[in-house]
Image (cartoon, rainbow, N blue to C red; front, top):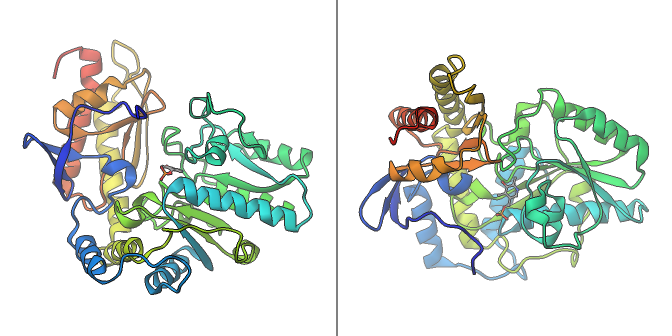
Length: 394
Ligand SMILES: *Cc1c(COP(=O)(O)O)cnc(C)c1O
């Protein structure tokens, strides 16, 4: 179906940060399949784990015990300071699990119409509940009636949350991204998540963080919330979790971890041995190669170089670059004008980038990037942005 407007390229193979198309042309991947292939393409540790698992056991269903799922649950909950895990197959499904958990948690407290607070500019997925939670009209238009039970507030605005607390007794949880990805790489103030945590404690709300894009080392820590001194009640994961093998997870602690009982939620494929073995290999590789620290260093290197080369005063054509934001390897270059055309231009030049929220060039390169590859991405982006004002065909 025509669900995508695809770029005119088809890739045949990949290695590390590089992809080759079906004519043999080579591309530097600064988007990683949208924050999925954090270890780059064809990573040997993941490939070996997957091959070994395929030859042993792919799927048995959750009717039975699954050792690899148990191991993965233990690794993830330890890394995130959580207690229990539910596994599914995508980010939207992970958020569906969190939303269902919040509603059940509310009903158990006697709240008849449990409401989840969500943010403007957020993205949580394309299923009916998650598109209803998403703060982007374009995602919702045409799919009404939306799922009820969401209340929207401005992102990074504690005052707005205070007002909700005063005016609605039905709130059971907040669902937020630690850094908004699709919304334009929006990084909240340093005290925001701690403020959210305090309000959640005060009112008995669950603090649920959508870490689908920010998780698994992307931001320079294992999880985006770890840049703040907070412990959420629920986090959701997917994208980078198994380097491209479909998987999602909803982790919880405390009362939230005890909410689901047998029969409340399920997934046929969720947490099968294949997906879990890939995720375990990802965790081992990030740990063994200290890739969270590496993501922080690389992100700073790229952002500093971009700032030095792109933000030296206004050009004759206007400001051009409004702001360069990054948390680890989640990088946004906000321009003063729409810049969607740069994606195709970059492709012609063998560089894969993304533009989101119309004016924000988004870079989500793999964590295994070399310094030289990082510098090559910077060169490419500087050339592209500069071409917008010089009007030259680069
Ligand atoms: C990509 C994304 C999702 C949706 O994940 P899917 O696997 O496409 O369902 C949800 N939340 C965030 C923050 C995302 O970036």
